Figure (cartoon, helix red, strand yellow):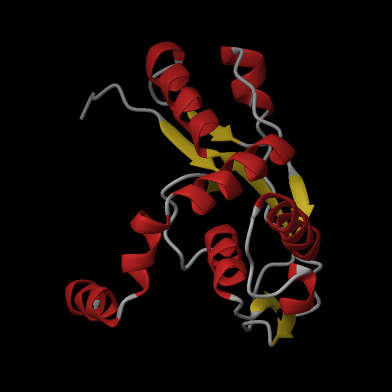
Length: 177
């Protein structure tokens, strides 16, 4: 239709306001509640992590500098095994939280059955956006995880209502097929 469009594909985002069903917020919240930290399979699955602010900056660059009709991959250059990510979060939570129901948090890790066909590795090649548009992530996974843990520690009033049965019922009603 002659519209000047671009497409972006990104790796796993994380950061503030991330809903609790995803890995990083689920782990943070479960640690704060003293609940099990479920890790799929053997925990060796690899994911690339992109801090949400870096993703926003990349989208801005693509909107302003990207060529219509092109596709740009946005990656964090932060490939980490799930078990290593969870252990890093445990260490940060042990360090940063004043009160935890269970310490050290690593004792809450529980390996659970992996889902069928679960990809061993999610990878993304972000060379094009770097070479053509000059964008690359500025937040390391270490910095981003620290900021994320701090956010979950200081925003319980935001995430706690999302765990209520009332909210879960609403969510099922609105988003069920």
